[in-house]
Image 1: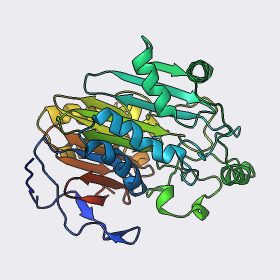
Image 2 (image 1 turned 90 degrees about the vertical axis):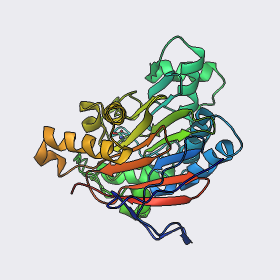
Image 3 (image 1 turned 180 degrees about the horizontal axis):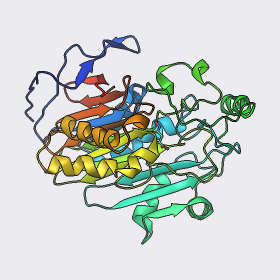
Length: 340
Ligand code: SD4
């Protein structure tokens, strides 16, 4: 299996020197690899751990679909991650409601929205894809389907997340300003009541050794949202899109803005038109700004993308967005360039 590196000047990805006490990378670069090489990329630095799980499958010749499925289960099960799965910050009624979707190399996809009590919504989404004639199940119906298929009903509200919600209730201020860098890169003290600093949603896309692409996205959505609110993450085309001929993309940030431009589909279509992944992500971010320049200054949205050659890229509205990458050459976190 051969690989080659291509260092591109003026890349929109800049380096972050140290993560978890480990030197992760030192160059400004875009890694370009031949398509046979497995690669996995994820939104947000802490998801380097999710990539490692996905890598166990990719590095042993497994399917990208299985890799992203297993990879995103890592933050779903992590109570420290207050944006995904168990330990996710609840809605304004104190209910942890989860959104997830998955898409494979054949265009098959599955999604669950506003699912409660199930620690791995991504697994339910995969089952919707594989065992039903449908693509989306929501709320009570999704829960019933999960329970009928052997999933266990659990309390996902951890004491920390309950405490944060109770603090928030004192003001109940819902202001869609979110911190640009994501909760997991700060510490938990950064949960500021009234501020929606909850956005470490994992979007993961991967290419396996055969050159097939798949993706998964899972989140507890924006903290203290209205009960029933669904963001971009489980919406195929918005939070995730895979086209095995072209590439795959996924998003994070304020989902409403991503849905308005059907963001991940847009990124893939821009790659189809010849844009490199990074340029495609940048153009999608610029589309958000064009629609509402003033509002865009107050929001965070980030896209990551992978093309069929194994090239990857990302772009965000605000600074501090990060992307975790794993392939045979590197296990790194990139700080993504931004418009603002
Ligand atoms: C949502 N896009 O529910 C998700 C939130 C997110 O990082 O990505 N947070 O709108």
